[in-house]
Image 1: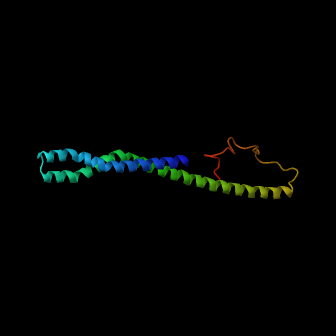
Image 2: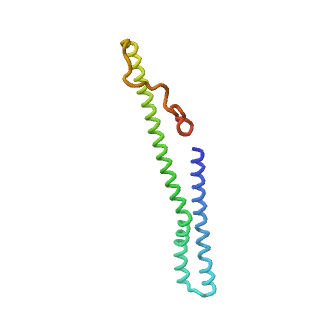
Image 3: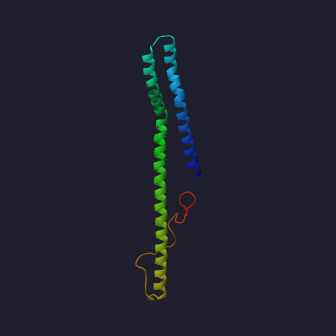
Length: 145
């Protein structure tokens, strides 16, 4: 979670910096038009047209720079939410399994306490032990419970 918080902070800072640069870019785009207007190379109407177009140009440039960040950030948030949802489903299933196992053991103990016929044999091999990896911690920090 620390890494995720740091990433979110970095994204917020990058977006804020990009917004702050927007006004500076508008002024940068307008500088040649102002110079041309000052030397009478363009009239006031053309200066006004360029002045109106400059913010849109700066926003388009910003979108080309920041758009991939926004797309990647959205994908990251969706993936993180899916992971959290899957982890919650796993935790719920694990608790259900443990509860069912407890009930199974209680039922077995009751049947076994009543005794078994002396000639009873299992109809298939009894699995001794656990499958490989059973009981190993899953996910970051074990079960996270």
